[in-house]
Length: 124
Image 1: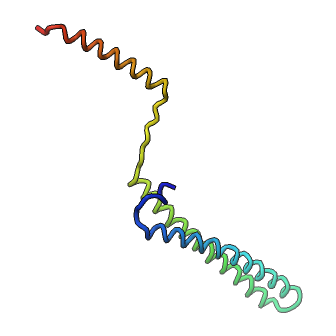
Image 2: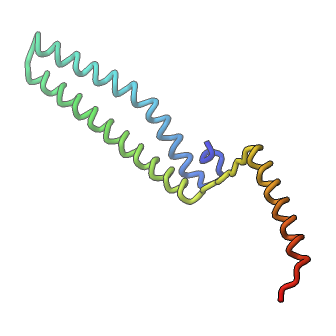
Image 3: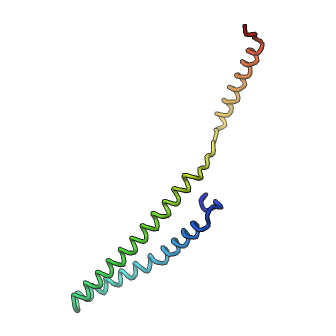
């Protein structure tokens, strides 16, 4: 979420949102198309020519190969952008528990007392 709030390059954010919309639109279409092709192939195997069934199976394999290729390339691209952003935009927040801050205050007070004692000494 920090990456989305970052006022960095808008092109990368538009690409991410465009790919998300395409993924949400293409996934159901590819699923329905693949199912219809396979149903047609089964019907052709039972009732008519095997050549058309093989063609529909080949079409289904091609459809899912292209879909998976696009998905993997897109995912890899966005992971690379995110890792690059994470490498160059590090944000560190130091959280100190209350008990640790009380101990550090006590230690710093003890350190100041020892400095006061040492300041009265003369170095020969």
